[in-house]
Length: 447
Ligand code: XLS
Ligand code: NI
Ligand code: NI
Image 1 (tube, protein in one colour):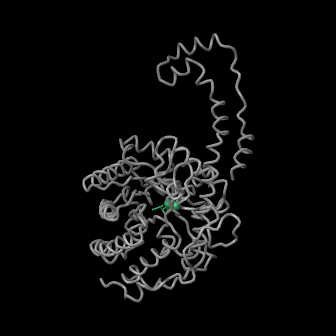
Image 2 (image 1 turned 60 degrees about the vertical axis):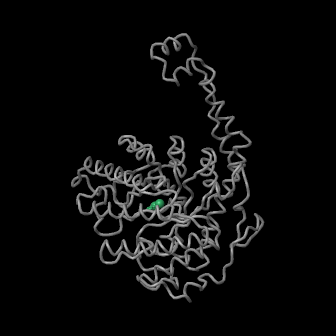
């Protein structure tokens, strides 16, 4: 397959935009950072290493580009979106790396189908991926931009209409395995830090036609084979599963963080996978924005973040750029408390609104998201360093550290009988205030 012409490869796709600079919180320039200073060290780490920002290929370069459930006609018309040829896909690599470099982002992520045309057979798709990944590799070397994660799209093609790892059709399952194997090879070639498994259509529309137990067992087997292959080829990436409660199926298996973590333990996969949390999915599960980040982190399973936001008035996966400082503070607080997010990161599984049609909006959206999370990081570090929240938390649980029997309970060495004896000789418990309003007021100090 021919490389794009030298003229195309050299040309600038964003000629009016130069490298985005930090101008400080007083700046009103939408094309400048107000908070994000990549090399600024805060609590022992550079901001870039706390945040590990990544651009998502599918929403930014060739996703649905302004389509929504009510129109598949694109509103984001880009000059490089010529056709479905290899030439167009190769040009997009130049577009993408110019974008990453000007934005100053260290990572990117993609699905197989985002970067290469599928052609008319699996063989053709694989060889297209070989050509494209050669170019991605040389661009990575040239720019220093790295791959946060790659994944296989096992949900768009009609063969996956009933799922892939949980398909009732074995051949669809087999195609899903082939795509996965190939993407593990590509991930290794491009030195990806993690590898994401989003279940896509792993779930069911109705239980009336579904062998639920067999499907779940097939999914576990699929994941085990992926682990085995990863080890065989010496691919070091952290595997993650991305939970999602709804969409596309009415009943998604990977409902939320705790469901996925339970599944991993059930199948002895808890040391092989972590979770990639998308807060927009968390809200679809009926939880608060940062709930799954909190649960996953508390259980030592938070591996990476698809940092986006939903639209509560719509109730579907709208993939908006994060712009709420309170939510960003609470998310970054979890990252700071667990000491970082590496080898995962914050990838923008976010898309411009259908109405946002200017090319510069691509930059403004990412700058806004990066800045909002950087601001959250700064606030979170201050909150942790000042220690007031921790003090309130410790006070609330103090009886667990001041009572000898409580320690025995935590060590799993106490019996119900001895606790009964303790309760019988202890006067009515004096509980303390939960201090929710105080803490809500306190949090606002760091936003
Ligand atoms: C879809 C998911 C998807 C994953 C990657 O809702 O968020 O974009 O992040 O397959
Ligand atoms: Ni996602
Ligand atoms: Ni999503």
